[in-house]
Every structure is written in C-alpha cells, then in structure tokens.
Image (tube, rainbow, N blue to C red; front, side, top):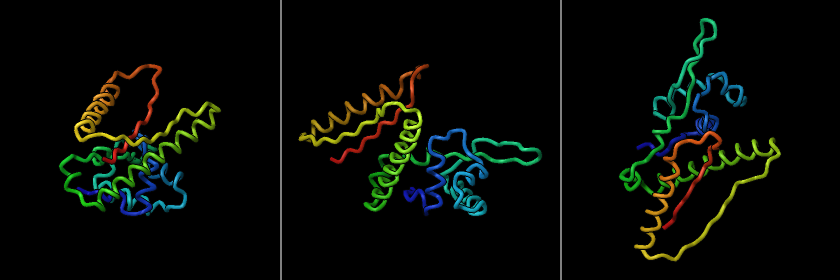
Length: 172
C-alpha cells in the first residue's frame, strides 16, 4: 500500500489542482494554473503519478492533429481498506491524515473563493466535542454515525441539491 501519495511538492500541487475536477485537465491547462512548474516537469510527474496509480486518463481532446490527454485523480487509489490501515505504521498514518487535512483545507479554500465572489452568506461550520463514552457506547456512536452518513450519501441526487463536503476525524 502506497501511503506516501505525493512524493514531493510538485505532485502535491498537481493533485490539489485536480481535486473535484472529474472531467480532468490537460497538461496545458495544468501549466496555466501552475505557472511556476515547467511543462516538462509536469509531464514527468504526471507520468509518474499515472505509474503509481494516483492519476488516471479520463479523456482526450483533439486540437487539429494533436491529441491532449485529460488527467484526473484516481480516487480509488486513495481508499484504504481496514486491513491496510491496521497494518500501516504510525508514520504512514500521520502522512495519510496530513494529506486528508490538506484535501479538506483545499476544499474550504475553493468554497471560500466561490462564496466570497458570490457575496453569499458563509454556511461553513466547524465544531469539536469531547465525549465521555464507554467502549460499547463509542462503538454504538460510530455505528449510528456511519448509518446516518450512509443514508444521506446514498440518497438520490436532488435537482436543486448542492455538493457538500462533510469530514470527520475520530480520535478514540
């Protein structure tokens, strides 16, 4: 299991640009967004990320006789089985949790930039609470929380619905 998802800053910047861009971006589009990274460096890192199964090709744009591949995050590569999580070292887990928080931070940045330009009210929330629970009550809490999240995750998409990111970190 490869927990070190982004081996350096360039890979991390590429991944941040591709968050929530299901239709993918071409190297040229990434180069416009990541002006400080040369096109050759982008190609090299994108190819390495494909080899590591972190990116996937989601389409091809034809511009005259030239074909441009469109790249997106391979979100399947970021899913960790319970078995792999249990087998991971402390350092592996810290790296993965760090990337999780960077993902959340990038999502908030995108939300805030869109929200501030629309002059709409900020609807984001943040809360933290310590609960004093027995092991049994803690397991019940996690089960109920999982059922609640699954209920809303599997609901049919509503025409006037918006994508909303809910993230949780439980430290037992």
